[in-house]
Length: 600
Image 1 (tube, rainbow, N blue to C red):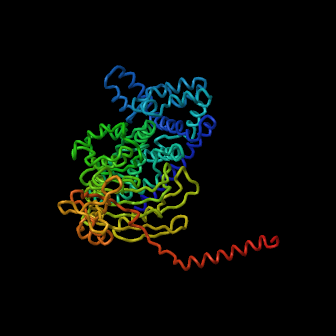
Image 2 (cartoon, rainbow, N blue to C red):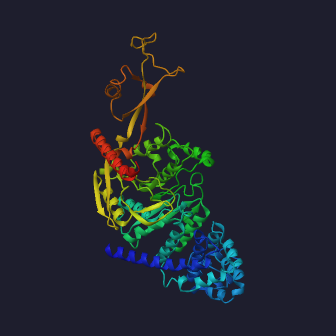
Image 3 (spheres, rainbow, N blue to C red):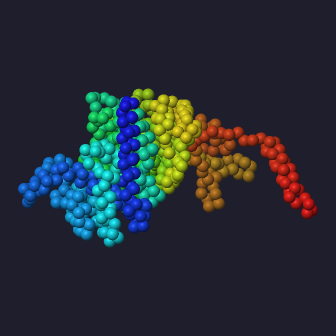
C-alpha cells in the first residue's frame, strides 16, 4: 500500500510539472485571450497533440487502410484497428509537415483536424468546444502558427512511449483544474480536495471493495461537469488495485464541460460513449443501468420549471420511477439529483453527494424535502452527513454537506445516522480562488474518514500541514430521532370571568383573531412520544385548557445539524458586565482628560 501511494504521489508530481509546462504555452495567448479563456485553446490543443502523438507510429498504415476501405460501410472499424485506438486520423498531415508551411497553417491545420474520426471531431467542433472558432481567432491575430509550433516542442511531447494513459490522464486533469479554478470558470467544478474526501468516504463505507481477485466497480455521476469526480474515483481505486476494472459513466448538460469530459475519457483510454450529454431531470441517458457507486455535486438553487411536466410524469410512476417521493419546490431541484442517484444504485450501492443546508430542514411535513427525508430515512439508506467548512467551494461560500448513502448498511449502522461536524477541519489557502478560501488537506481528510470509521460519538484531533490544530466531531443518532408529529394546538376562548367558552355540545370554543380566524400554534412532538403526555407536560402548564386536533396530526422529519453540535456558552453575570462598564467609563474619562484637559 505504501509503495502504491508513493507511486501515485510521484505520478501526480510529474503530471503537475508537465501540465505547468503546457500551461506556459498560454503566454502566446496573452492580450488575445483573458486568462480565464486560456483553456479554450490549451485544452483542445492538448487533446489534438496527444492523439497525434499516439497515432503517429501507425500513420502510414491508417492512410493505406483509408484508401483500401473507401466507400465501405464498415470502414470505421478497419481504421480503428489500423490505428490501434478507438480513434484515428486520415489526413496526410503530421505536426512536422504542418510546421513546414507557416503560410498555410490555418488551411492545413483545419484539414488535419477534419481528418480525425467522428468521435474526436464531435469533441472539437460539435459537443461544445467549437474549436474552429478559436482557430479562426488565432489565425486572424497571427498567433496560430506559434501555438502549433509550441505544442510541437518538448512542452507538448505527449508520445505514448514517454507518457502512459494514466500519466496523460493526470496531466489533462491538472490542466482542467487550472482552467476551472478561476472566478468565472468554477461553476461546474469541484476542487480535488473535496472530491478526494468524497471518494475516500465511499471506499471507507464499502466493506466489499476487496472481494474477489480484483476490484470491479461501475461509477456514475449525473451532474459530472468536466468528469473530475469520476476520474478521481477511478484514480483512487486504481491506487488500491492497479488491475482494478473501473468503468465510469456520466451525464452533463453544459456543452463545453461535456466536451472536456468526453475528451478526458478518451485520453484515459476509457469508453467516451459512456459520457453523455443531456438534462438529467428529463432526459436520463442511463435508464436501464445500475451502478456500484454514485458520486456527484449537483447545482444548488436551480429551477426545474422547464422540465416540470416530465418530472411530474416520472413521479407518477411511483417506486418504478426515479422520483417516487413528493417533489421539492420548483426553485431548487438538488434533491432530484439525489433521488436519481439512489434509483440507479445497486442493492448494495453507495452514494456520496454534495448538498446545501436546505434538504436538512426545508419543507412542511409530508411535502417536498420533508418527504425526501422520510423516504431516505424510512428505507434506512442514509448513513452519514458531513458538514464542510464555509468557503470550501469556488462558486459559493455557504455551508455545504456531503451526504453518504448506503443501500445495504452494515448491521451496526442500521437504524442509525452519523452526523460529522468537519467545519473546523481545513487549512487556509494562501490565495483564495473565487469563494474558495479553505482546503481540506490530507490530514483533515484522514481525520474526517477516521471519525466516520469510528462510528460513535467522539472528537478526532490532529495537527494540520500548516501547524494549526484541526478537529472533527461526530455524533451518532437513531434515525427515529429525526422524526416528529406536528400537532395544531388551539387556545380556548374565555369569558369575562375567565371561564372557558363552550359551544352547544359542550366543546371548548377556540380563541379567534379580529377577523374571526381561529388562533392556532403548532408543536413538534418527538416521534414515539405520547402526544397527550407531551401536551400535559409542555403545553397545558403555560396554556391551560389548550387542546390539539387529532385529525390534523402530521408526521414530519428534520435533521437539526446545527442544534446537534451547538455548545451553550453561559452568559456573563450582570454584575461582571456592570463592573466592566464602570471600568471602561473611567478609562474613557481619563483619556478625554488627557486629550482636552489643557483647553478646559
